[in-house]
Length: 147
Image 1 (tube, rainbow, N blue to C red):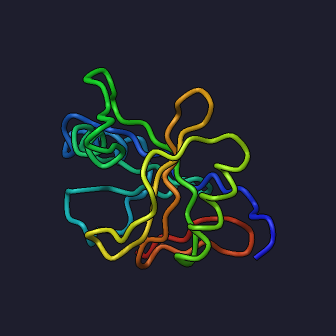
Image 2 (cartoon, rainbow, N blue to C red; image 1 turned 90 degrees about the vertical axis):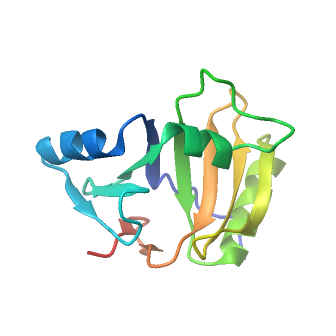
């Protein structure tokens, strides 16, 4: 595979109350999609980059290693680079690291059937590089969420 094209596909916000946050974003007019996870995570179509909501404490745990936990002040904002295969995930992670990113969590199989890992930019902003079941990235770089 050649040099990967960077994709900013999803911003995931850690939230304290999923139901309240879901209601807020629905009230703003964003269409909620991909309900396979129930209330565990919520995705909203923004006609471009996707907004994801995830309980902040779960996100803090997911985006860390036991030897490098997220601090209590971490309120769970991660950026996502969605891929269409585990191979793409590995290439994108390795490319980011070769350009100065820090590996936070090696790519691994996820409990929801995906494959992903985390890197941090030089300022410590977390990126998840992931392939997730039923979420595809089109040729134009846009994320397609199932209805």
